[in-house]
Length: 299
Length: 291
Image (tube, rainbow over the protein chains, first blue to last red):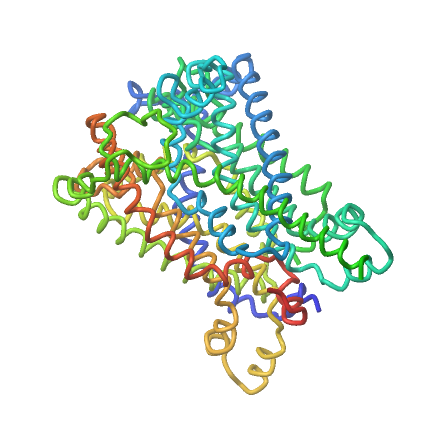
Protein backbone atom coordinates (compact mmCIF):
# COMPACT_ATOMS: atom_id res chain seq x y z
CA UNK A 1 0.00 0.00 0.00
CA UNK A 2 2.89 2.35 0.62
CA UNK A 3 4.67 3.58 -2.44
CA UNK A 4 7.61 5.19 -0.75
CA UNK A 5 10.25 3.77 -2.99
CA UNK A 6 10.79 5.58 -6.27
CA UNK A 7 11.37 3.43 -9.26
CA UNK A 8 14.99 2.68 -9.64
CA UNK A 9 15.53 4.20 -13.02
CA UNK A 10 19.04 5.03 -13.92
CA UNK A 11 17.92 8.02 -15.89
CA UNK A 12 19.56 10.96 -14.17
CA UNK A 13 19.27 12.88 -17.41
CA UNK A 14 15.49 12.77 -17.34
CA UNK A 15 15.40 13.71 -13.67
CA UNK A 16 17.47 16.81 -14.34
CA UNK A 17 14.86 18.16 -16.74
CA UNK A 18 12.14 17.77 -14.14
CA UNK A 19 14.04 19.23 -11.22
CA UNK A 20 16.31 21.83 -12.82
CA UNK A 21 13.81 24.66 -13.53
CA UNK A 22 12.72 24.90 -9.90
CA UNK A 23 16.30 24.62 -8.69
CA UNK A 24 17.41 27.45 -10.95
CA UNK A 25 14.74 29.84 -9.66
CA UNK A 26 15.33 28.86 -6.03
CA UNK A 27 19.08 29.19 -6.26
CA UNK A 28 18.93 32.48 -8.17
CA UNK A 29 16.74 34.05 -5.51
CA UNK A 30 17.84 32.21 -2.39
CA UNK A 31 21.20 30.50 -2.83
CA UNK A 32 23.14 33.30 -4.53
CA UNK A 33 21.96 35.98 -2.08
CA UNK A 34 22.70 33.55 0.71
CA UNK A 35 26.30 33.08 -0.40
CA UNK A 36 26.69 36.81 -0.89
CA UNK A 37 25.26 37.25 2.58
CA UNK A 38 27.81 34.83 3.96
CA UNK A 39 30.57 37.00 2.50
CA UNK A 40 29.26 40.29 3.88
CA UNK A 41 28.74 38.73 7.28
CA UNK A 42 32.53 38.92 7.56
CA UNK A 43 32.62 42.56 6.48
CA UNK A 44 31.99 45.94 8.04
CA UNK A 45 29.41 46.96 5.41
CA UNK A 46 26.98 49.69 6.46
CA UNK A 47 25.59 52.80 4.79
CA UNK A 48 28.88 54.70 5.11
CA UNK A 49 31.12 51.89 3.95
CA UNK A 50 28.61 50.61 1.38
CA UNK A 51 30.98 50.91 -1.60
CA UNK A 52 34.33 50.35 0.10
CA UNK A 53 33.74 47.75 2.71
CA UNK A 54 36.51 45.71 4.30
CA UNK A 55 36.71 42.17 5.45
CA UNK A 56 36.93 42.16 9.22
CA UNK A 57 36.90 38.44 9.91
CA UNK A 58 34.80 37.15 12.77
CA UNK A 59 34.35 40.53 14.46
CA UNK A 60 30.58 40.68 13.76
CA UNK A 61 30.12 37.15 15.06
CA UNK A 62 32.06 37.76 18.25
CA UNK A 63 30.29 41.09 18.76
CA UNK A 64 26.97 39.26 18.69
CA UNK A 65 27.92 36.19 20.69
CA UNK A 66 29.58 38.20 23.47
CA UNK A 67 26.60 40.54 23.71
CA UNK A 68 24.23 39.47 26.47
CA UNK A 69 21.42 41.05 24.42
CA UNK A 70 21.72 38.25 21.91
CA UNK A 71 21.34 35.53 24.52
CA UNK A 72 18.35 37.30 26.04
CA UNK A 73 16.70 37.56 22.61
CA UNK A 74 17.49 33.92 21.93
CA UNK A 75 15.87 32.94 25.22
CA UNK A 76 12.81 35.02 24.40
CA UNK A 77 12.57 33.62 20.89
CA UNK A 78 12.80 30.03 22.12
CA UNK A 79 10.15 30.76 24.75
CA UNK A 80 7.96 32.39 22.10
CA UNK A 81 8.35 29.43 19.74
CA UNK A 82 7.80 26.86 22.48
CA UNK A 83 4.66 28.49 23.86
CA UNK A 84 3.25 29.01 20.38
CA UNK A 85 3.87 25.41 19.36
CA UNK A 86 2.37 24.09 22.59
CA UNK A 87 -0.86 26.04 22.14
CA UNK A 88 -0.99 25.44 18.39
CA UNK A 89 -0.50 21.69 18.55
CA UNK A 90 -2.80 21.00 21.49
CA UNK A 91 -5.40 23.49 20.24
CA UNK A 92 -5.14 22.18 16.68
CA UNK A 93 -5.67 18.58 17.76
CA UNK A 94 -8.48 19.50 20.16
CA UNK A 95 -10.44 21.51 17.59
CA UNK A 96 -9.80 19.11 14.73
CA UNK A 97 -11.06 16.17 16.79
CA UNK A 98 -14.19 18.16 17.67
CA UNK A 99 -14.71 19.17 14.04
CA UNK A 100 -14.34 15.56 13.00
CA UNK A 101 -17.37 14.50 15.09
CA UNK A 102 -20.61 13.99 13.31
CA UNK A 103 -22.29 17.27 14.12
CA UNK A 104 -24.66 19.38 12.07
CA UNK A 105 -22.95 22.24 10.26
CA UNK A 106 -19.39 21.03 10.64
CA UNK A 107 -18.57 22.36 7.16
CA UNK A 108 -19.76 25.78 8.29
CA UNK A 109 -17.46 25.64 11.33
CA UNK A 110 -14.56 24.48 9.18
CA UNK A 111 -14.89 27.51 6.93
CA UNK A 112 -15.11 29.85 9.93
CA UNK A 113 -12.06 28.32 11.60
CA UNK A 114 -9.98 28.55 8.47
CA UNK A 115 -10.77 32.23 7.85
CA UNK A 116 -7.75 33.64 9.73
CA UNK A 117 -5.43 31.77 7.37
CA UNK A 118 -7.22 33.13 4.32
CA UNK A 119 -7.36 36.79 5.27
CA UNK A 120 -4.04 38.50 4.44
CA UNK A 121 -1.81 38.50 7.52
CA UNK A 122 -0.85 42.14 7.42
CA UNK A 123 -4.52 43.12 7.70
CA UNK A 124 -5.33 40.94 10.65
CA UNK A 125 -2.06 41.79 12.39
CA UNK A 126 -3.06 45.45 12.23
CA UNK A 127 -6.55 44.64 13.49
CA UNK A 128 -5.08 42.84 16.48
CA UNK A 129 -2.90 45.84 17.12
CA UNK A 130 -6.10 47.87 17.36
CA UNK A 131 -7.76 45.29 19.59
CA UNK A 132 -4.88 45.54 22.08
CA UNK A 133 -4.85 49.32 22.01
CA UNK A 134 -4.65 50.73 25.54
CA UNK A 135 -7.34 53.39 25.30
CA UNK A 136 -9.78 52.11 22.71
CA UNK A 137 -8.97 48.44 22.17
CA UNK A 138 -11.65 45.81 22.65
CA UNK A 139 -9.62 43.81 25.17
CA UNK A 140 -9.29 46.68 27.61
CA UNK A 141 -12.88 47.76 27.04
CA UNK A 142 -13.88 44.24 27.97
CA UNK A 143 -11.64 44.26 31.06
CA UNK A 144 -13.20 47.55 32.15
CA UNK A 145 -16.67 46.07 31.80
CA UNK A 146 -15.59 43.30 34.17
CA UNK A 147 -14.35 45.99 36.58
CA UNK A 148 -10.73 45.00 36.01
CA UNK A 149 -7.83 47.36 35.39
CA UNK A 150 -6.85 47.90 31.76
CA UNK A 151 -3.47 46.45 30.78
CA UNK A 152 -0.68 48.27 28.89
CA UNK A 153 -0.61 45.53 26.27
CA UNK A 154 1.56 47.13 23.63
CA UNK A 155 3.32 49.55 25.96
CA UNK A 156 5.31 47.04 27.96
CA UNK A 157 7.72 44.28 27.11
CA UNK A 158 5.74 41.30 28.40
CA UNK A 159 2.39 42.86 27.59
CA UNK A 160 3.35 42.87 23.93
CA UNK A 161 4.81 39.39 24.29
CA UNK A 162 1.40 38.03 25.29
CA UNK A 163 -0.43 40.19 22.77
CA UNK A 164 1.73 38.94 19.89
CA UNK A 165 1.38 35.39 21.18
CA UNK A 166 -2.41 35.60 21.05
CA UNK A 167 -2.24 37.14 17.59
CA UNK A 168 0.09 34.49 16.27
CA UNK A 169 -1.97 31.63 17.67
CA UNK A 170 -5.03 33.14 16.05
CA UNK A 171 -3.19 33.38 12.73
CA UNK A 172 -1.51 29.98 12.74
CA UNK A 173 -4.14 27.72 14.27
CA UNK A 174 -6.00 27.18 10.97
CA UNK A 175 -2.96 25.62 9.31
CA UNK A 176 -2.67 23.18 12.21
CA UNK A 177 -6.39 22.38 12.15
CA UNK A 178 -6.29 21.64 8.42
CA UNK A 179 -3.24 19.41 8.78
CA UNK A 180 -4.68 17.47 11.73
CA UNK A 181 -8.09 17.15 10.04
CA UNK A 182 -6.42 15.66 6.99
CA UNK A 183 -4.45 13.34 9.24
CA UNK A 184 -7.61 12.21 11.05
CA UNK A 185 -9.08 11.06 7.75
CA UNK A 186 -6.19 8.64 7.33
CA UNK A 187 -7.11 6.69 10.45
CA UNK A 188 -9.24 3.70 9.44
CA UNK A 189 -12.61 3.80 11.17
CA UNK A 190 -12.63 0.06 11.86
CA UNK A 191 -9.85 0.56 14.43
CA UNK A 192 -12.23 2.61 16.55
CA UNK A 193 -15.06 0.17 16.00
CA UNK A 194 -12.89 -2.71 17.15
CA UNK A 195 -11.70 -0.78 20.20
CA UNK A 196 -15.27 0.15 21.07
CA UNK A 197 -16.34 -3.47 20.94
CA UNK A 198 -13.59 -4.22 23.43
CA UNK A 199 -15.06 -1.58 25.70
CA UNK A 200 -12.42 1.13 25.22
CA UNK A 201 -13.38 4.64 26.28
CA UNK A 202 -12.82 7.89 24.43
CA UNK A 203 -9.56 8.71 26.20
CA UNK A 204 -8.11 5.30 25.66
CA UNK A 205 -8.87 5.43 21.94
CA UNK A 206 -7.48 8.95 21.69
CA UNK A 207 -4.18 8.00 23.35
CA UNK A 208 -3.75 4.59 21.75
CA UNK A 209 -5.17 5.12 18.26
CA UNK A 210 -5.56 8.79 17.35
CA UNK A 211 -2.27 10.20 18.65
CA UNK A 212 0.10 7.48 17.40
CA UNK A 213 -1.49 7.44 13.95
CA UNK A 214 -1.41 11.24 13.74
CA UNK A 215 2.34 11.30 14.29
CA UNK A 216 3.46 11.03 10.65
CA UNK A 217 1.34 14.10 9.81
CA UNK A 218 2.12 16.01 12.95
CA UNK A 219 5.89 15.90 12.95
CA UNK A 220 6.54 17.59 9.59
CA UNK A 221 3.85 20.13 10.50
CA UNK A 222 5.50 20.79 13.88
CA UNK A 223 8.90 21.28 12.25
CA UNK A 224 7.50 23.69 9.68
CA UNK A 225 5.39 25.64 12.17
CA UNK A 226 8.32 25.76 14.54
CA UNK A 227 10.57 27.28 11.88
CA UNK A 228 7.87 29.70 10.73
CA UNK A 229 7.14 30.80 14.30
CA UNK A 230 10.80 31.20 15.20
CA UNK A 231 11.22 33.37 12.12
CA UNK A 232 7.88 35.14 12.33
CA UNK A 233 8.61 38.71 11.42
CA UNK A 234 5.13 39.81 10.31
CA UNK A 235 3.30 39.49 13.60
CA UNK A 236 5.99 41.02 15.79
CA UNK A 237 6.74 43.83 13.38
CA UNK A 238 3.18 44.82 12.54
CA UNK A 239 1.59 44.38 15.96
CA UNK A 240 4.34 46.12 17.91
CA UNK A 241 5.09 48.71 15.25
CA UNK A 242 8.67 47.56 14.72
CA UNK A 243 9.66 46.80 18.29
CA UNK A 244 7.72 49.37 20.32
CA UNK A 245 8.27 50.26 23.16
CA UNK A 246 11.90 51.16 22.48
CA UNK A 247 12.90 47.84 20.92
CA UNK A 248 11.76 45.78 23.89
CA UNK A 249 9.29 43.57 22.04
CA UNK A 250 11.71 42.04 19.54
CA UNK A 251 12.48 38.43 18.89
CA UNK A 252 15.64 37.54 16.96
CA UNK A 253 14.28 38.00 13.43
CA UNK A 254 12.61 41.34 14.00
CA UNK A 255 15.78 42.62 15.65
CA UNK A 256 17.79 41.64 12.56
CA UNK A 257 15.25 43.24 10.26
CA UNK A 258 15.59 46.42 12.27
CA UNK A 259 19.38 46.33 12.32
CA UNK A 260 19.63 45.53 8.63
CA UNK A 261 16.86 47.43 6.94
CA UNK A 262 16.22 50.37 9.23
CA UNK A 263 19.69 51.01 10.62
CA UNK A 264 21.55 49.53 7.62
CA UNK A 265 24.16 47.77 9.73
CA UNK A 266 24.41 45.34 6.85
CA UNK A 267 27.45 43.27 7.83
CA UNK A 268 26.23 42.94 11.41
CA UNK A 269 22.72 41.92 10.31
CA UNK A 270 24.16 39.39 7.85
CA UNK A 271 26.15 37.71 10.62
CA UNK A 272 23.08 37.73 12.86
CA UNK A 273 21.05 36.05 10.12
CA UNK A 274 23.63 33.30 9.73
CA UNK A 275 23.61 32.68 13.48
CA UNK A 276 19.80 32.43 13.50
CA UNK A 277 19.97 29.92 10.67
CA UNK A 278 22.55 27.83 12.55
CA UNK A 279 20.40 27.85 15.68
CA UNK A 280 17.39 26.68 13.68
CA UNK A 281 19.42 24.04 11.85
CA UNK A 282 20.62 22.73 15.20
CA UNK A 283 17.11 22.57 16.72
CA UNK A 284 15.42 21.02 13.72
CA UNK A 285 18.23 18.55 13.18
CA UNK A 286 17.91 17.35 16.78
CA UNK A 287 14.17 17.08 16.40
CA UNK A 288 14.39 15.25 13.10
CA UNK A 289 16.90 12.80 14.54
CA UNK A 290 14.73 12.13 17.58
CA UNK A 291 11.47 11.70 15.74
CA UNK A 292 12.98 9.72 12.84
CA UNK A 293 10.06 10.58 10.60
CA UNK A 294 11.93 12.28 7.83
CA UNK A 295 13.65 9.03 6.96
CA UNK A 296 10.44 7.60 5.60
CA UNK A 297 9.60 10.81 3.80
CA UNK A 298 13.02 10.98 2.20
CA UNK A 299 12.64 7.60 0.55
CA UNK B 1 -35.43 0.25 25.44
CA UNK B 2 -34.74 2.30 28.51
CA UNK B 3 -31.05 1.57 28.04
CA UNK B 4 -30.97 2.87 24.47
CA UNK B 5 -32.82 5.97 25.64
CA UNK B 6 -30.00 6.76 28.06
CA UNK B 7 -27.46 6.03 25.32
CA UNK B 8 -29.01 8.47 22.85
CA UNK B 9 -29.42 11.00 25.61
CA UNK B 10 -25.70 10.92 26.28
CA UNK B 11 -24.78 11.26 22.61
CA UNK B 12 -27.15 14.19 22.39
CA UNK B 13 -25.53 15.84 25.41
CA UNK B 14 -21.97 15.45 24.13
CA UNK B 15 -23.03 16.85 20.78
CA UNK B 16 -24.46 19.92 22.45
CA UNK B 17 -21.24 20.33 24.42
CA UNK B 18 -19.13 19.96 21.25
CA UNK B 19 -21.22 22.51 19.39
CA UNK B 20 -21.02 24.93 22.32
CA UNK B 21 -17.22 24.72 22.40
CA UNK B 22 -17.06 25.16 18.64
CA UNK B 23 -19.32 28.21 18.80
CA UNK B 24 -17.09 29.84 21.43
CA UNK B 25 -13.98 29.27 19.32
CA UNK B 26 -15.76 30.43 16.20
CA UNK B 27 -16.58 33.70 17.93
CA UNK B 28 -12.91 34.17 18.78
CA UNK B 29 -11.95 33.40 15.18
CA UNK B 30 -14.49 35.63 13.58
CA UNK B 31 -14.37 38.58 15.96
CA UNK B 32 -11.37 40.43 14.41
CA UNK B 33 -12.68 39.86 10.90
CA UNK B 34 -16.15 40.98 11.87
CA UNK B 35 -14.54 44.02 13.48
CA UNK B 36 -13.04 45.03 10.13
CA UNK B 37 -16.33 44.49 8.36
CA UNK B 38 -18.13 46.59 10.95
CA UNK B 39 -15.65 49.43 10.48
CA UNK B 40 -16.05 49.31 6.71
CA UNK B 41 -19.82 49.77 6.74
CA UNK B 42 -20.06 52.03 9.76
CA UNK B 43 -19.87 55.78 9.91
CA UNK B 44 -17.47 55.76 12.81
CA UNK B 45 -14.11 57.33 12.15
CA UNK B 46 -12.80 56.38 15.55
CA UNK B 47 -9.45 54.67 15.27
CA UNK B 48 -10.34 51.05 15.96
CA UNK B 49 -13.35 52.10 17.96
CA UNK B 50 -13.80 50.70 21.39
CA UNK B 51 -17.41 49.62 21.50
CA UNK B 52 -18.18 45.95 21.63
CA UNK B 53 -21.49 46.21 19.83
CA UNK B 54 -22.06 43.82 16.99
CA UNK B 55 -23.51 46.23 14.48
CA UNK B 56 -22.46 49.74 13.57
CA UNK B 57 -24.94 52.38 14.62
CA UNK B 58 -25.33 53.81 11.15
CA UNK B 59 -24.91 51.83 7.96
CA UNK B 60 -23.10 53.55 5.14
CA UNK B 61 -21.22 52.48 2.04
CA UNK B 62 -19.32 55.74 1.97
CA UNK B 63 -15.99 54.06 2.69
CA UNK B 64 -16.41 51.77 -0.31
CA UNK B 65 -17.26 54.71 -2.55
CA UNK B 66 -14.15 56.56 -1.39
CA UNK B 67 -12.04 53.44 -1.79
CA UNK B 68 -12.90 52.99 -5.46
CA UNK B 69 -13.15 56.64 -6.45
CA UNK B 70 -10.59 58.47 -4.37
CA UNK B 71 -7.74 55.97 -4.08
CA UNK B 72 -5.84 54.06 -6.79
CA UNK B 73 -7.33 50.86 -5.36
CA UNK B 74 -8.12 49.31 -8.75
CA UNK B 75 -4.61 50.08 -9.93
CA UNK B 76 -3.12 48.28 -6.91
CA UNK B 77 -5.46 45.41 -7.51
CA UNK B 78 -4.29 45.03 -11.09
CA UNK B 79 -0.67 45.09 -9.91
CA UNK B 80 -1.42 42.44 -7.31
CA UNK B 81 -3.32 40.33 -9.83
CA UNK B 82 -0.39 40.38 -12.27
CA UNK B 83 2.08 39.38 -9.58
CA UNK B 84 -0.17 36.81 -7.91
CA UNK B 85 -1.03 35.19 -11.23
CA UNK B 86 2.57 34.91 -12.31
CA UNK B 87 3.67 33.54 -8.93
CA UNK B 88 0.84 31.00 -8.80
CA UNK B 89 1.46 29.79 -12.35
CA UNK B 90 5.22 29.60 -11.85
CA UNK B 91 4.77 27.84 -8.52
CA UNK B 92 2.33 25.28 -9.91
CA UNK B 93 4.39 24.58 -13.01
CA UNK B 94 7.82 24.31 -11.40
CA UNK B 95 6.67 22.44 -8.29
CA UNK B 96 4.61 19.93 -10.31
CA UNK B 97 7.71 19.10 -12.35
CA UNK B 98 10.26 19.13 -9.53
CA UNK B 99 8.05 17.16 -7.13
CA UNK B 100 7.71 14.47 -9.79
CA UNK B 101 11.47 14.39 -10.33
CA UNK B 102 12.13 14.01 -6.61
CA UNK B 103 9.46 11.38 -6.15
CA UNK B 104 10.17 9.12 -9.11
CA UNK B 105 13.86 9.32 -9.95
CA UNK B 106 16.99 8.48 -8.06
CA UNK B 107 19.84 10.86 -8.78
CA UNK B 108 22.93 12.28 -7.15
CA UNK B 109 22.36 14.97 -4.49
CA UNK B 110 18.70 14.04 -4.25
CA UNK B 111 18.54 13.84 -0.45
CA UNK B 112 20.75 16.87 0.05
CA UNK B 113 18.61 18.92 -2.30
CA UNK B 114 15.44 17.83 -0.50
CA UNK B 115 16.91 18.79 2.85
CA UNK B 116 18.20 22.02 1.33
CA UNK B 117 14.60 22.87 0.48
CA UNK B 118 13.65 22.68 4.18
CA UNK B 119 16.78 24.58 5.11
CA UNK B 120 15.73 27.53 2.96
CA UNK B 121 12.77 27.93 5.32
CA UNK B 122 15.25 28.51 8.15
CA UNK B 123 16.76 31.62 6.63
CA UNK B 124 15.28 34.71 8.15
CA UNK B 125 13.84 36.85 5.33
CA UNK B 126 16.41 39.53 5.98
CA UNK B 127 19.13 37.07 5.11
CA UNK B 128 17.78 36.94 1.59
CA UNK B 129 16.41 40.46 1.33
CA UNK B 130 19.57 42.43 2.06
CA UNK B 131 21.82 40.80 -0.54
CA UNK B 132 18.91 40.50 -2.95
CA UNK B 133 18.46 44.27 -3.00
CA UNK B 134 22.16 44.83 -3.54
CA UNK B 135 22.15 42.35 -6.43
CA UNK B 136 18.94 43.75 -7.94
CA UNK B 137 20.32 47.28 -7.85
CA UNK B 138 23.46 46.13 -9.63
CA UNK B 139 21.40 44.32 -12.29
CA UNK B 140 19.11 47.33 -12.74
CA UNK B 141 16.17 45.13 -11.80
CA UNK B 142 15.05 46.81 -8.60
CA UNK B 143 11.49 48.16 -8.58
CA UNK B 144 10.17 45.75 -11.19
CA UNK B 145 7.32 43.24 -11.20
CA UNK B 146 9.83 40.68 -12.39
CA UNK B 147 11.96 41.00 -9.26
CA UNK B 148 8.99 40.75 -6.91
CA UNK B 149 7.45 37.77 -8.75
CA UNK B 150 10.78 35.94 -8.80
CA UNK B 151 11.29 36.59 -5.10
CA UNK B 152 7.80 35.34 -4.21
CA UNK B 153 8.18 32.29 -6.43
CA UNK B 154 11.34 31.30 -4.61
CA UNK B 155 9.55 31.96 -1.33
CA UNK B 156 6.73 29.50 -2.08
CA UNK B 157 8.63 26.86 -4.07
CA UNK B 158 10.22 24.84 -1.22
CA UNK B 159 6.87 24.19 0.49
CA UNK B 160 5.17 23.49 -2.86
CA UNK B 161 7.84 21.04 -3.98
CA UNK B 162 7.68 19.10 -0.73
CA UNK B 163 3.91 18.99 -0.81
CA UNK B 164 3.93 17.74 -4.40
CA UNK B 165 6.66 15.21 -3.71
CA UNK B 166 4.82 13.62 -0.78
CA UNK B 167 1.68 13.53 -2.88
CA UNK B 168 3.31 11.86 -5.89
CA UNK B 169 4.74 9.27 -3.49
CA UNK B 170 1.21 8.10 -2.79
CA UNK B 171 0.13 7.79 -6.42
CA UNK B 172 0.53 4.17 -7.55
CA UNK B 173 3.19 3.73 -10.20
CA UNK B 174 1.54 0.86 -12.03
CA UNK B 175 -0.15 3.05 -14.64
CA UNK B 176 3.05 4.87 -15.49
CA UNK B 177 4.95 1.60 -15.79
CA UNK B 178 2.30 0.28 -18.10
CA UNK B 179 2.58 3.41 -20.25
CA UNK B 180 6.36 3.13 -20.41
CA UNK B 181 6.11 -0.48 -21.46
CA UNK B 182 3.80 0.66 -24.23
CA UNK B 183 6.58 2.97 -25.38
CA UNK B 184 5.25 6.29 -24.13
CA UNK B 185 7.92 8.88 -23.27
CA UNK B 186 8.48 10.31 -19.79
CA UNK B 187 6.89 13.63 -20.74
CA UNK B 188 3.78 12.21 -22.35
CA UNK B 189 3.33 9.85 -19.42
CA UNK B 190 3.72 12.72 -17.02
CA UNK B 191 1.07 14.99 -18.39
CA UNK B 192 -1.39 12.44 -19.73
CA UNK B 193 -1.34 9.94 -16.89
CA UNK B 194 0.18 11.50 -13.78
CA UNK B 195 -1.07 15.08 -13.86
CA UNK B 196 -4.79 14.22 -13.89
CA UNK B 197 -4.28 12.22 -10.68
CA UNK B 198 -2.77 14.99 -8.61
CA UNK B 199 -5.31 17.81 -8.85
CA UNK B 200 -5.89 17.97 -5.05
CA UNK B 201 -2.21 18.65 -4.44
CA UNK B 202 -2.21 21.25 -7.19
CA UNK B 203 -5.17 22.92 -5.48
CA UNK B 204 -3.26 23.20 -2.21
CA UNK B 205 -0.07 24.62 -3.60
CA UNK B 206 -2.04 26.90 -5.89
CA UNK B 207 -3.95 28.30 -2.93
CA UNK B 208 -0.78 28.53 -0.86
CA UNK B 209 1.03 30.48 -3.59
CA UNK B 210 -1.99 32.68 -4.16
CA UNK B 211 -2.39 33.55 -0.47
CA UNK B 212 1.32 34.24 -0.07
CA UNK B 213 1.64 36.51 -3.09
CA UNK B 214 -1.67 38.24 -2.43
CA UNK B 215 -0.90 39.15 1.17
CA UNK B 216 2.88 39.47 1.50
CA UNK B 217 4.09 42.86 2.68
CA UNK B 218 7.52 42.72 4.34
CA UNK B 219 9.43 41.82 1.16
CA UNK B 220 7.31 44.08 -1.00
CA UNK B 221 7.98 47.01 1.31
CA UNK B 222 11.68 46.62 0.64
CA UNK B 223 11.66 45.59 -3.02
CA UNK B 224 9.09 48.10 -4.26
CA UNK B 225 9.51 51.84 -3.77
CA UNK B 226 7.66 53.19 -6.81
CA UNK B 227 4.01 53.98 -5.81
CA UNK B 228 2.99 53.03 -9.35
CA UNK B 229 4.00 49.46 -8.65
CA UNK B 230 2.35 49.20 -5.21
CA UNK B 231 0.61 45.91 -4.54
CA UNK B 232 -2.62 45.75 -2.51
CA UNK B 233 -0.88 45.31 0.87
CA UNK B 234 1.42 48.27 0.22
CA UNK B 235 -1.44 50.38 -1.06
CA UNK B 236 -3.71 49.67 1.87
CA UNK B 237 -0.87 50.35 4.26
CA UNK B 238 -0.33 53.71 2.58
CA UNK B 239 -4.01 54.55 3.19
CA UNK B 240 -3.53 53.78 6.83
CA UNK B 241 -0.35 55.76 7.26
CA UNK B 242 -1.79 58.74 5.41
CA UNK B 243 -4.50 59.86 7.74
CA UNK B 244 -6.07 58.15 10.74
CA UNK B 245 -9.52 59.22 9.62
CA UNK B 246 -9.21 56.89 6.62
CA UNK B 247 -9.64 53.87 8.81
CA UNK B 248 -13.02 53.13 7.26
CA UNK B 249 -11.52 53.17 3.77
CA UNK B 250 -8.76 50.87 4.94
CA UNK B 251 -11.34 48.49 6.38
CA UNK B 252 -13.37 48.58 3.16
CA UNK B 253 -10.20 47.76 1.22
CA UNK B 254 -9.49 44.90 3.60
CA UNK B 255 -12.94 43.44 2.99
CA UNK B 256 -12.61 43.70 -0.79
CA UNK B 257 -9.13 42.14 -0.69
CA UNK B 258 -10.31 39.23 1.40
CA UNK B 259 -13.35 38.28 -0.67
CA UNK B 260 -11.57 36.63 -3.63
CA UNK B 261 -9.46 34.52 -1.30
CA UNK B 262 -12.47 33.30 0.69
CA UNK B 263 -14.27 32.53 -2.55
CA UNK B 264 -11.29 30.57 -3.86
CA UNK B 265 -11.09 28.72 -0.58
CA UNK B 266 -14.74 27.69 -0.62
CA UNK B 267 -14.35 26.50 -4.21
CA UNK B 268 -11.31 24.40 -3.33
CA UNK B 269 -12.51 23.31 0.12
CA UNK B 270 -13.29 19.67 -0.63
CA UNK B 271 -10.03 19.15 -2.46
CA UNK B 272 -8.05 20.81 0.31
CA UNK B 273 -9.05 18.64 3.21
CA UNK B 274 -8.11 15.54 1.28
CA UNK B 275 -5.07 17.05 -0.34
CA UNK B 276 -3.23 18.02 2.83
CA UNK B 277 -2.84 14.45 3.88
CA UNK B 278 0.70 13.16 3.98
CA UNK B 279 2.32 10.23 2.31
CA UNK B 280 0.45 6.96 2.42
CA UNK B 281 -2.90 8.49 3.03
CA UNK B 282 -4.50 8.83 -0.36
CA UNK B 283 -4.40 5.16 -1.11
CA UNK B 284 -6.13 4.68 2.22
CA UNK B 285 -8.84 7.10 1.46
CA UNK B 286 -9.83 5.28 -1.67
CA UNK B 287 -10.55 2.20 0.38
CA UNK B 288 -12.20 3.77 3.42
CA UNK B 289 -15.16 6.00 2.87
CA UNK B 290 -15.08 9.33 4.65
CA UNK B 291 -17.57 12.14 4.83
